[in-house]
Image 1 (cartoon, one colour):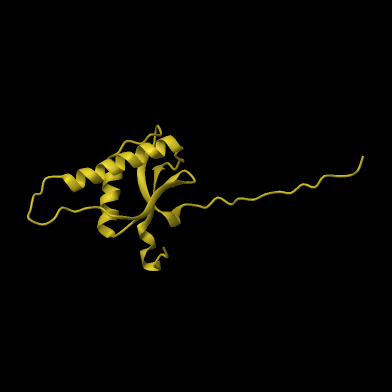
Image 2: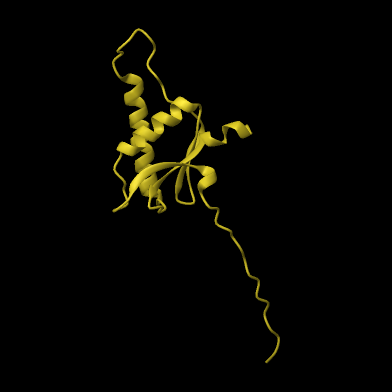
Length: 121
């Protein structure tokens, strides 16, 4: 799915402050907790005749390079996600959970070094 450049701020990642990477188990637990919060939001008793706000995301939320990456559908979902993540406990001691733009994450360069075998004896 191509990203409109005016929407890159909706491509976000959940991480910690200070920044540490999640392992698979930590990420799965956080994804489950965030999913539970979405369900709580959707199933909350109505306080007005208007339909309840339902956070919406595009694509699949996934763990990549230690970050939980996702794509918010709109500004309201992004605001909801930031507020919700701030209330969750971090699985990594001495850190707190935060939402950052994916563009703010430094990409790790992957390099390889080819060392040829020497025929010298």
